[in-house]
Length: 503
Image 1 (cartoon, rainbow, N blue to C red):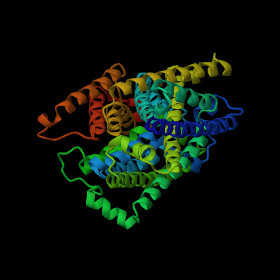
Image 2: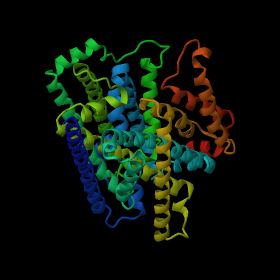
Image 3: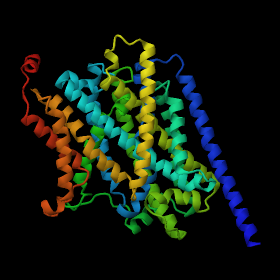
């Protein structure tokens, strides 16, 4: 009798897993339909910058999904149990950084009519600086995107597909193959619209989960806030200057992370410069930054609610596991599980598909010099682009497998740490170009851009001992960029031709 009950339970659990998989596949079919429709009559210009015809409000909404990603969907709620709402300090920094992107960087990109934003470095600092900046973007975005992708594949495998006997490796391969299917032709022209769809589903899933958990706990917003305060979750401002989560460190670090990971990131900027004019692109950026502020607060609120729910129902999950455990394994209504899964998949693809497209664009334009290849016809350029696109998909897969081996817990702090090391030199190159009138020593630029992060890594390993108890947090990006800038300046000279142009 007991054996029959166990087999029956497994049968129904397997049926629900199969149904969830069917929903995911139907979602993919919808994306493929949009990709087919938007990629008609597409060419290389469509792939790289959407023919500069994207609507600003569509880009603004779609960028929410790209910025939030599966990392935010899973890890931000999970951090509340350990650090409360102090991640919102970083979010405030993000918000400030978007204004710098909108009113300092976007005017430069539009004035120069750039397809790849790293072309600026070539025009201002030289070919070596240009190639160095592009390679640091490729490294940064590859690591960041695959870290986000790994987290979502991990959750799908652990909480849905494992019950069906589908291994992690197969899940990763299939997901990347599906991303290739709907991005290989349309590029940015397609992604602008698929991101909009996916952001819609992600926000709806977030709101449904918040409302349901509050209702299940019989709380309104005021009572929820009081319960979170009682748990100590609502503290935002941290006042210990020696701690890594000190509010000034978090805000300054967040601002520079935005400038680097959005304003100096081909993936994010190729969507912005696909808008027809600067004014509308700035509207997009400002609208987006206010919306992102609200969205992140709701994710933190959801995290607090999940921990309240876990306490009320004797659930021991925490960190990255708390949201999927409650949504999939705790006996909540099936529609909540579906909302979670669609929200998770919707959070995954805007970051993965955009990264794959941006990396393809950057490698083709910045490294292979495709725009300058007058001896290549459109057909050959397209063939090369598709090969590069497929190669990056294979690299993504290898990185996902690597992160599986080194995963040791919550991943959002690891993402910010990686950004601090890899985006620092890129930020320094742009700051040097924009705010000085000096010429770099191009032979030394690659060495400087490697030496600075290495020195910063050594410093961070010994920060508490060397700095009198001070622990470096998200301001590592600023320290890294500052050191790179100083080294660039030390080995630079006056650019007489630039001074003449300014005069």
